[in-house]
Image (tube, rainbow over all chains, first blue to last red):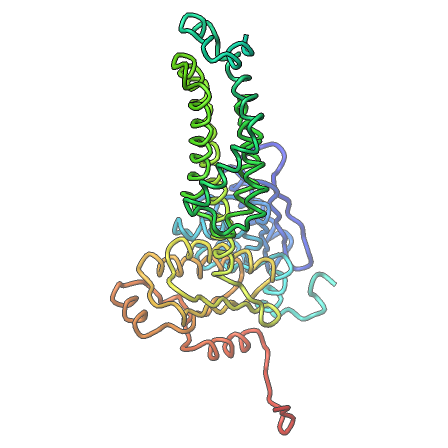
Length: 131
Length: 301
């Protein structure tokens, strides 16, 4: 696993984790994101994960596959995952290469992702966004 | 030296005239063309009229333009630099292209000017073939370069106009229209080739982001046919839209297109299709939670 500064940040927002990717990740950084997220889900008892990839202008097949894997792992640990902020070019390139995110939910941006999780998980409003 | 040649027609014997270099001939040539400017320009204008060129222009415009072309022409002969002429030719093209002036007319008038000037040189140096040859050696390459420059500038300018119009048409051809909050429609009219399909994808995906759309209705009532490549491209566009968090509804698949797609074996199982645009909009409104109700008795019509 890669050492050095992480190229992503994982923030806790109430019952959700928001993972924000800052720049293109190489394979080891991608695996580090996977490890950190799956571990953090249990530690903070999160119900949902939002992975924001708006800063990425390219997403390779390994990255796409790992995002799918994270979603599946998180599901096993009790959290729903939504990918947000996929850029138009990236979206089309992913589809052309035959790599959709599979069964993973996607949303336009962070706001939409939060709304999606709120709807899907139907949390009582008192615990939404950690209020 | 140049003075002795121009005043004394018999002075240019072969031995003396071969000693005259291009550097001395060109100024003499230019001086001659400047001196007879009015006469030669009128002669040129007359030849243009005879050849029925540039009939789209008024007599006054012709007078102005022929004068400036003439001056530019002589200037290029003098300086040997075509840059100013290039700029002038481009400006001129910009002015005359919308009037329907054709390439052959522009090339025609420049060649006419070349001939008119050459004739006047023949006339002036007819008694001394050696000198005439030398003068023409200096004149012809420069004149040909001018003709070339003007023609190329004109064609370039015309191509620029065409490109500009193509861009404008292309942008108009796939409008992305917001109809309700977070609902876009994309009417597709005309044949959808792969270039248009690519552009449609681009506009749709950026449209989704700028309008924060959740539902997009693509109406292909106006598309006469769709081939396998374009159909697959449409499927990919729908998938890509889903990745950006928007669902796509396709409406108005004609019987022909439906048959083609199924025969071609395009996998449309993931596509949400609805018969017509009205049905598509109703479904989109339902997805977004809009309800449209008609108020009884309040019709203004």
